Length: 495
Image 1 (spheres, rainbow, N blue to C red):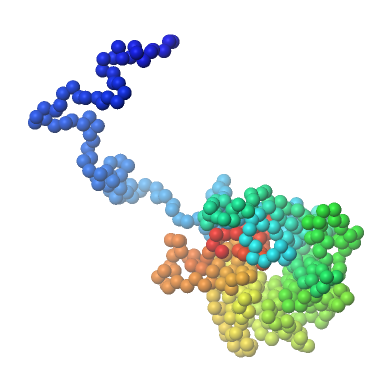
Image 2: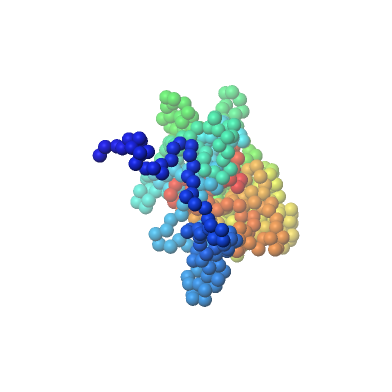
């Protein structure tokens, strides 16, 4: 079809407008007549339009009629992982605006326990992408126990989440930060048993000829405790062409004092650079192992006794070289003097009617000790009330929380903020708490319009089968956790 020329339009359309002209009405409105708007509707004011609902009636009138007719109410309750249940086919997705960093990494086998390894990259690191070194002990499937291992790990390329609520795209640091894919590199030390608990200890560099070394202690399901030097494994990540020594996987020492009694309690002293280790087992017995000047390990087979059930957790005092605390399935926490010849505790407190699973001793306020229990509760204790057995027996926790409905599996004070605590529980959640929050009774009735949620609760992170979580001592606010689906590393905008 041919196009019509512009000149033809002007000739065939007498009323056509030329550029710059405006249309003029053929005739005005006669006197006494009203202008009729063909688009006029029944509303004569903006106020009336705003008041009417979707069906032309006020919202209040329509809602009252729906309630009277029994219309279904929409559930507007806040969903809380661990407290509310998903329906069939539903899944949870994280709100990325609440995470400054969020990464998940899946190893070959899940780990019941892991520990973050302190590195030489500097303290108070805030730039991205971040790097984390860690060590974990696997739980291989039944019948495949010989596939177990101590995993030495390097997690790199941990980039910042640009959807975080506190993310400033105009930040001066953005030009220095790169977006990268997270990478999990592993080196393996073969084992023949599941690792129940693993802890790392870094001895500082004493001289140019004696560099810093990192050793680990892993408590096996078989009852043995294996000590390894993982320094060469860490070096291999960052030294091109590095070859592991032929005997690198050989244990420095094997502690057999527990015989075949399984255990979960394990802790290195933070005040003895060479290394001093506490281990506890299912019979309630605790042993101490000390590293000698020659690099060997000596275990005092005269154990500490007093618990009537399994020792679940051990923690050295952060300020006193010879003091440690223990938690047991008998529901008690005991304080010990390691020098006592009797090998008996100095103080014992019944902290729960259920098992006392975990402990954490504040490194900034050493008179504060937190305990987590099998019934889902956790408490904070003031050790100044435990100076004598009589005052300790009548002491009450300075804080007590029953938010979680399943067992507490891990608990840890923030390394640089003595009011922040992380808690892992059997309800598939890792929660962050701020004990400094204080609200009066009226204000604390609801948190974000949710009932029965303490105002001290800062953050809830969902993680399937979460077992253990640790703050990174050199990356402020960063948390690493292990669970049934692997490892998670995150930093919330709340801490």
